[in-house]
Image: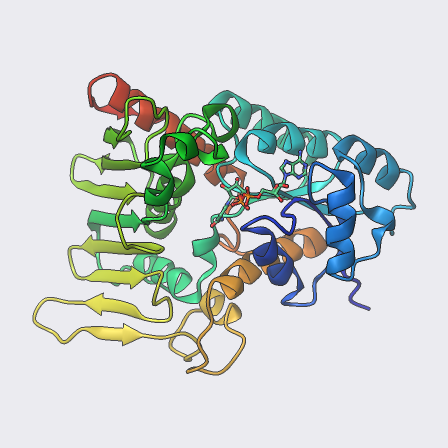
Length: 379
Ligand SMILES: NC(=O)c1ccc[n+]([C@@H]2O[C@H](COP(=O)([O-])OP(=O)(O)OC[C@H]3O[C@@H](n4cnc5c(N)ncnc54)[C@H](O)[C@@H]3O)[C@@H](O)[C@H]2O)c1
């Protein structure tokens, strides 16, 4: 019998943005069963949200301490196995740390932590506990992103020499131009969000995407950030030059004040024999460009796709799948790792990628604050 993995969720209450994505994604392949958690800081709110979504309230806890105490008292086959951390950024580290210390598998939202030091502590704890740890860089779950990764690795575009990733949103305009509003949201409060707003929130996705796709490590970066107002403590826009090597370079352009933009993550990877282009707002089309040839459009579900790409497509070609499916594929990878102890490389973003992301955020701010200088990333 294929018993479902018992899942708990921290954060992601009815008032949250990301909760619904994780709940639906986790149920998509019938691998997980949500059994409880701490959805909100107030127990009353958590319970009423559980009731709203039809979840029994006996495993809705006041806080993580009581969750751990009560869950550990249950027989092992009833206990939560995987816990997803979907709270504001500053809670990722203390929660993930406590979960690893108590032998739970963890799925954690990005950015992994608010400092590199914290991220390295999690690495040590994970090594000791040998638990599965995923960091939800959601966009890596799209079938055509996985296809692009496989084709780059197989040499389709030759040696990569240029990357250009844009992640543009415009939503913060409504907040940033109003003095009161910009001092009241957690994403613009360094105590809650960490060092950076724009780069921590979306630049980190762009950075992960180029390393995920090319299988190359960014060696050094030079950043120019925009804070827009003197009293605003967090960047809301930034341009970052990246170098993989002396001959492979590129740019990350990231903004929350790109007026009118929704969630425009556009990735371009160019190699000596061809280029790929992919747009998150049109995720089922992967463009392959070659000099002197018509552009090819690859789509999900066709037999020309790789195994890992096909594994993330649920319906025959022509049935558009989107962000829920992309996150569903990440949960599917985690399920394989938890149940079978193995998984395909790239099937879910792991702790190493989370650590790289936090290092990137810190180095970006360092580069900007020191006069837009080149800064090396850690290895
Ligand atoms: N992977 C992605 O594409 C993606 C997209 C959006 C957000 N995120 C990340 O997800 C996280 C949450 O973002 P969001 O937009 O959903 O935030 P949000 O502010 O909309 O929701 C946060 C939720 O956490 C709850 N919460 C706060 N403190 C808590 C505590 N101590 N215990 C339990 N619950 C608590 C809040 O009540 C709320 O339900 C952030 O780290 C963000 O960076 C990732």
